[in-house]
Length: 366
Image (cartoon, rainbow, N blue to C red):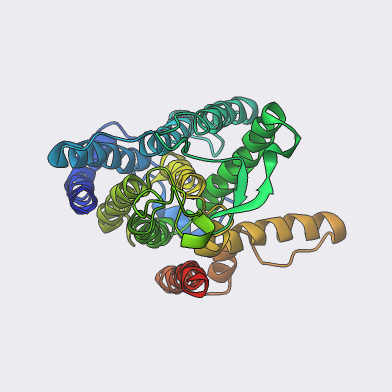
């Protein structure tokens, strides 16, 4: 538990005090946000605000993870390192996207094909490696079974190991793409995505800690099945709690500067990285489908875009004044801070519901 507390505190402090230094660096080089003219007119005042702030979140999280293990003299785990790899890899793709937007002063960064190739490469490497590195109980960071609160009986390897791995790679890629795009679509108002992400990562701190206390390895399930013990067959639950604490603390420190009126934006650097970290935590903690509940705000905002585009193509009319959903309420006249706070409340309710489902499953089964 010390590693979790150390990691959260270090990442918070690094992000809180490192962000203003990064802001000065970006301002000195004129790296400001490009604002689209077809968006809400209130956003035009944000033109020139420093972006690529997600680099601070990634840097603070990785540094805190390393320091947390050094202070407790515990080695890093395969699960933790792979989640951080996924987060950093997608963050790098987002950084390239942001940098091109700034340097070219256009709303489009990386071309669709290079961006897709980069995201796919990082996701596939993660998906393949996460099925490797078995521990002494032959548990790998992830499994080919679809999970909700734990692995279900739906195993993607039903047709053979090679086919199972391929199907898992596709499944993991879809999860990573959905999570990263969900956070990216949510990142449209000052502090909205950062605050919502903080709540979701806090949930994974609790989930990882609980799974660690109720792990099959801790309860010695050699003679008794995991189903009978209702324990969790997660390879490195405590270290996943450390990773979640690192990102949570970094988001809290960054939110101090990202809250309205924002002094810096996270950009695609941050949104893609945070989405990747969420997907990675869900896959390695065996809570893949539960992420749909815990991250319900991201799901709602993504659905608003899908509904808007689909309905417009089918009928030529719009359901919302503008998508994603937060901009619809802006055009209805809601103040930006009001939207952000109410969406945070919705995010918190989804997190509470997800944690309630997670705990209720254990209570009912014991």
